[in-house]
Amino acid sequence: MDVQTWTYIIVGVSFALYIGIALWSRASSTKEFYVAGGHVSPLANGMATAADWMSAASFLSMAGLIAFSGYDGSVYLMGWTGGYVLLALLLAPYLRKFGKFTVPDFIGDRYYSNKARTVAVISALFVSFTYVAGQMRGVGVVFSRFLETDITNGVLIGMAIVFFYAVIGGMKGITYTQVAQYCVLIFAFMVPAIFISIQLTGNPIPQLGFGSNLTGTEMPLLDKLDGLMTELGFTAFTDGSKSTIDVFFITAALMVGTAGLPHVIVRFFTVPKVRDARLSAGYALAFIAILYTTAPAVAAFARTNLMDTVNDKAYDEIPEWFGTWEEAGLLAWSDKNDDGLIQYRPGKLFSEKGPSFQEGKGKYGQRLLNNEIDQSSQNELFIDNDIMVLANPEIAKLPNWVVALVAAGGLAAALSTAAGLLLVISTSVSHDLVKKQLMPDLSDKGELWIARGSAMLAVIVAGYFGINPPDFVAAVVALAFGLAAASFFPAIFLGIFYKRMNKEGAISGMIAGLGITVFYMMRYKLGWIGGPTSSDDWWFGISPEGFGTVGMLINFAVALTVSRFTPAPPKAIEEMVEDIRIPSAG
Image (cartoon, rainbow, N blue to C red):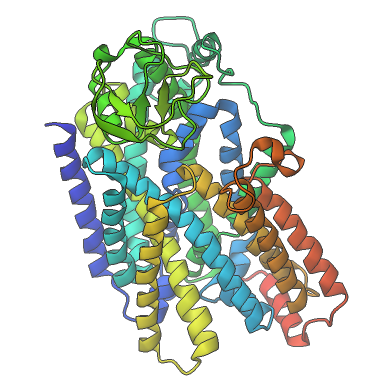
């Protein structure tokens, strides 16, 4: 069977499974909708947390980003995995002991203020909508290739699926759906990695194959890759080009951003006891490590195979996968020197973010571009970072069912995280804004209806951002982590470990941290303030992906300063904080 038939079968079966689970476990109360009733086992919660955590950025984009940036991509590995450890050990058990539904719920009660709650709701919406844009973009990339539709239609299909099981099932439905999605995505990621590791190095363990010699030679894989890249003018795969300060700030933003992500934190409210929160965090870390330790190997395999397969080859001799991704609008070639050969070199093919195609084909059969071609570089090839994991099995000539399996895994990763984020948006509006502030007498049934309505509206907005994303998946997600670092982390950390922190300090810190970070991202990432910019304009050489660390430091400084010159919190709040920090036997 061809790839598309296999895709319809495997994706169709997985979608039917997700919808069936959502119907079986649909929420009938707000507690089930928000925290799955608080009765999820640590093992199931660990798998669900891993699926929630390993988004389209982890599955689709991280390995692609490492494939093209090499050593510089390690910031994502260090930041995201280190951040999860920080969250699991430093914050999760205490938040579970507090026993609320959401992060804004914690901030509102800890800082005895609806203003603090409102600022937290706004922060949650900023973080979640930025993050979910990356997920919907990932869904569109998968559908555009494997169901042979454009990205817009792919995003619309993804919206419909997420709407169904997030709105009907709530956290209860999402939790058990995510258990299934974890199984799908990790199997889909590992199977081609194992196949390609055997193919290239003879070692069935990708993590070891990454450092092994190529089959039948004494040359290590990474030495060959470094040689290929330097020969063509690229920076060696194992060398970095980012400044030390930017690497540090991006890694820190990803770490503390992870510890402030509301859709991951809320997962620890779904288990019965504090001990279960710690145990599920351990399970999740083990499940996450399987993918994260494999991603660098997948990146190296993909870049090696790509350069061997495409570079300096005649267009009419390259494999079928090249043309298929061209048709999907995620790969393009322009023959600058009219020799019929594909020259993959440093530099951009064109200045725009993605290709715009004309009708018809060129003399070699290639898609013709509307884009203005950049003649200042020798590069003739455009490759979207987000396709590398999906294209890797095709480039390596693996069986069609493996190619389709990877498509199902990419969808599982994107949809699982999108559902968790949509629930955060829904609960922030229905519980923290409407129930806690605007309509305190609202019935449980009425709150549930508002939660579902909020989720429906959130799906629509998320779809828009998925169709019009500011960048590729991992970069969009990195911005969300920066926003979480600048807003939530200081308020949560100080709320747990500093009894003297008061509402004035927390509110001022969150506004200052979030405000400066949003400004920086709008100015230097989106170009909405002052027009287009370059990396030469960055403050202190810090990229928008790393600026969340600056926002966090500003948040801490403002919060601590303001709290020193304003009244201490009530005695009851200080006693509550003390109680949260006391270890529990349960």
